[in-house]
Image (cartoon, rainbow, N blue to C red):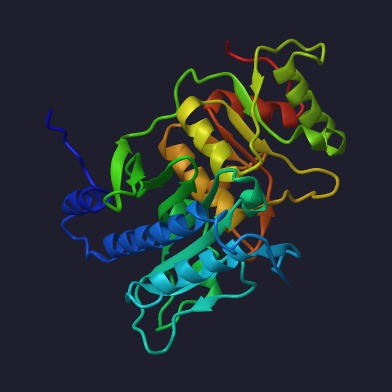
Amino acid sequence: MDRYVVTLGRFILEQEREHPGATGALTNLLYDLTQAAKLIHREVSKAGLVDILGKTGKGNVHGEEVQKLDEYAHEVVFNAMDHGGNLCVMASEEEEGLLQIPEQFPTGDYVLLFDPLDGSSNIDANISIGTIFSIHKRCTEGRDGSLEDCLQPGHRQVAAGYVMYGSSTVLVYTTGSGVHGFTLDPSIGEFLLSHPEIRIPEPGKRIYSVNEGNFSTWSTGQQQLVEWFRGTGGNGGGGFSHRYVGSLVADFHRTLLYGGLFLYPADNRNPDGKLRLLYEASPLALICEQAGGRAIDGSREILAIEPESLHQRTPLYMGNREWVDLAERTLAGEGMAVGR
C-alpha cells in the first residue's frame, strides 16, 4: 500500500513557500541543525560500545562535571552551524561566554542558543537525553552578534525545538505556526513526519512530573500543590499519577503528548530555580504555548521574562493550562479550587 511520506527537508521547504518573502536562511539553519542531530544520534546510539561515556575531568560554567558526550555534542552543533552564513553569534549552555562566528566565514541575521546535551547525567544509565535549541533574529548591527542579541525575551524567538535521543530519535520544533514532530529513520538517514500539528490533549492525562526528593526544601505553597496532586494534604485533589524521568526533554515530551504538568520549582537551595532560561525554559515554553499549553516561572509567563544574563536560571511550570493556572494560584496563596 502506498504511503504518503514527508521528510523534514520537504516539510521545511513547503512551510517556506507559505512565506513569499522568506530568504531561505531559517530553512538552512533548521537543515544544518538536523545534520548535527544525526551525528549526535550516531554517537549516542553506540555510546555503550565505544569509549565515549564517562567524564572528561573538566567542569562547565555551572560547576558541573562535563561528560565526554556533552563535549562532543557541543562541538558538533557549533561546527555544523558556524560556516553557513546564517548566524551572527551562538551561545551554549556549556560555554561561559558568546561563541562568535570564525573570521573566515560569513555571518547572517540569526542567533542560536543551545543546550547540546540535556540530561547528560543519565547517559551512563541509557535514559533518554536531548538537544534543545532556540533561534532569534538579531537586533544589533555589524558583522558579529553581541550579548544584546542573545538576551532577548522568549516571545521574540523565531524558532525553537528539541531532539530526543531515546528508543527512537525524535525532533520536535516550531516556527510559530504550530508544533510538528519527526522521527529519524536510521535506514535512510531521514527525519520523517510522525507527529503533525501536535496539541497538548485537553483534557490531558492527570500526570504531574517533579522531583519529590526536594519536597522538604520547597515553599509551603509548592508543598500544598504537590499534596493536592497526591490527595494527601487534606485539601481535596488526588487522582494524579506521578511520572518523573529526570531528563527535561523526556519529561516534557511526555507532557506534550499526554498532557499534565511538569514542574521544576525553586527551593531554599536554589531560590532562582535551577533550569536555564535561555537554553531550556524559553524554547520549551514556546513549543508548549504553540501546542496550546502554558509555561510560567510560578508567577510570570516564561516568554515574557527579560533575560539579564546568558546563564540565568528560572523555576518552570508547564503543561495543560488548567494545571499551570492551578499552580499559579496556589503559589500565590489563592487556594486550590479548580474547574473540574
